[in-house]
Length: 217
Image 1 (tube, helix red, strand yellow):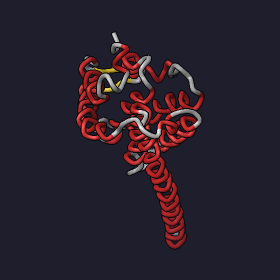
Image 2 (cartoon, one colour; image 1 turned 30 degrees about the vertical axis):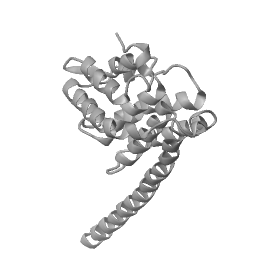
Image 3 (tube, one colour; image 1 turned 30 degrees about the horizontal axis):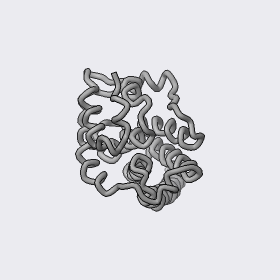
Image 4 (cartoon, helix red, strand yellow; image 1 turned 180 degrees about the horizontal axis):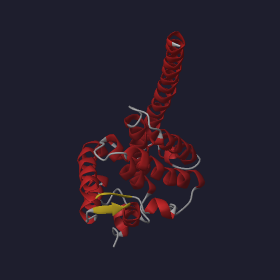
């Protein structure tokens, strides 16, 4: 059984407590994506963003950024199109994690969130409504695509951007939504220049290898 409906309201129960309760409910040696999403069915999209992005900022599951990046595409599209329910392909729902690792990540996330969620409060609410939510969805989609990239150091910054977006949506805090924008820009800048220089390095190494091979031959 999932959480009771009133728990989706941020003014009833803190998000940090909801996340820790979720960790307690997810038992077993392995936990599938389907089980995780089943516990979150009908929850606020802001809470879903937090649960899928906070573990990326505190990584302790191998490959978590790629998997959770893929999962973030769903709520991003939900925000863009204003859908009421989250859709996820069946093959994705069959993916699984070690239960111990996932529970540890969620509990660590709850502890971190407990320290920052007190700063979020309802303000500048127009930034958490449509059409601003469409932009937030597009930004989250871009962050999700960055997280999927197998690029060292490209995980935490987009993860933080999504955390800020999640808190903004959950607490109706337009200031947090605005703060997510420069963080997202920073993530995009890091990937652009990181990819540019990485590609330049690969080209240089290839040319050097060809020159060396030419001298040997």
